[in-house]
Amino acid sequence: MADPFEVLQLGPNMYFVGGELDIETAPRLEDATRASVEAGGPLLLDLSAVSFVDSTGIRAFLSMARRLGEKGCVLLHAPQRNVRRVLDIVRITDVENVHLEACPLVAYPEIVLDWTPPDDLAERFTALRDYQRETAGSPDL
Image 1 (cartoon, rainbow, N blue to C red):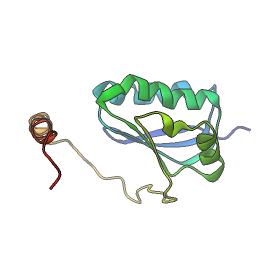
Image 2 (image 1 turned 90 degrees about the horizontal axis):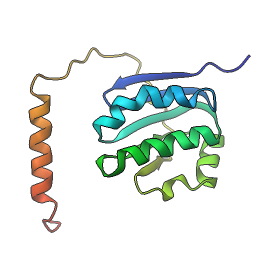
Image 3 (image 1 turned 90 degrees about the vertical axis):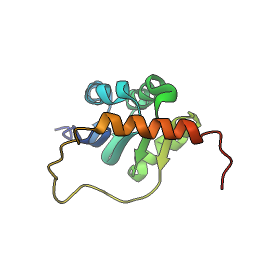
């Protein structure tokens, strides 16, 4: 029997992925993350429970990065040793907006918090984007 595959969304752009990421399951990952990719920003994928990744899984990561473009990046967090090896072999981090975190931390929460975005979230993000644009050309302090 094959390992179960699961994509759990824990925040607007944060996902825990588990099982085998292959030709059968990669479309489920892309479907689950589609709205987050369209929205932009960093997309965090915790891979600590992914036991296998094939070329279709790699293509899913690259597709997300391509669709994000300059609007964000894909953060691949805590892959198991065998998955990390595949990611290293294909040199996935050569893609400008794909980052691989080597930290072995498994960050599954012990408690899932109830969280509702604040009513003024859009305005707060706009203010942060405006600040970033204003300071982007500033020299480092």
